[in-house]
Image 1 (cartoon, rainbow, N blue to C red):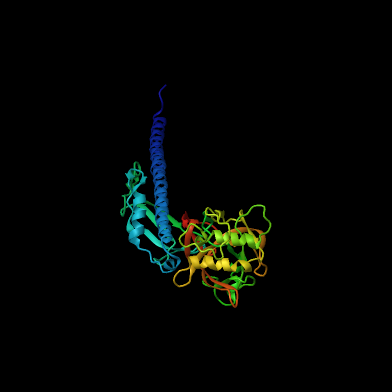
Image 2: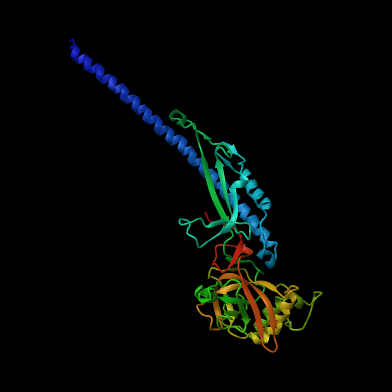
Length: 388
């Protein structure tokens, strides 16, 4: 049967349209393939860059924490970071990582930012990192694959669409956050400060914060003496005696060791435990100390001996103290009370006559050995964590 010419012409037109449609579909399919492969690969490389950035930031911030560990509390107050000791640590960590086809990642010195991290700042509102070398507590790292470092990613199919390369970068910040743990032997005195003392409302009328404010470790009570004495972590002991407190103070005093060259039997408890150490403690509220409830007066001479063994030439002794859970400064704490964090103080003097007084000052922006991410009472831990 002969097909009329008119119908043949229509069939030829339809075949032409199908070819055009197939060509368009192939182009779209190629575009989808390019997107799936090239941009998927970009995502993989970005994740590898993120791992490298995390490692570099943590390594640099850990170095910062270790530097603080070598400084006295007075040296920490005036510490100015040297970038040449911190940036190479981040760069060395980056070299141990890879991203795609690039191993031993290069990290530009300008992409390592040392600064101060504001834990109260909402990152969506403003950048919490303020670049500074004065008492810094954070390190930000940006690792790139672009024209500035490590070269951009070479695409596979995207060059068809005029995209021969893709650039990608990753950012990470590690910071020394508020101290959350204390290792065994890390608490030099059996004194704690009430959580209430750190309430900003207590200092708002004077338009100041609790940093660098004086506090009495004796006598306790009221905002000026918002503290309490304890015998550390004693399970199943509901109260403590003056004898218990004298033991703890004497066993903490190196001058009470009969085998030591500075042995001084005055105001040292008769039985000395050379293996005694304050317990390791988590400041998250799960561990508790036994507080004495006001039996400290007869133990004050023992505490003075401990202070004399540790004070510097200016009569100052920097100490780490626990912060106990309480909504009051009026009551002398007694019994088992949870520990929720840690603070730092400087004992500036002890007077036994005519007035019995232990004067101290709470200090902030100090770094002590231990992990971070605890309650913020002015003291950071030396082990950093990622904050972004």
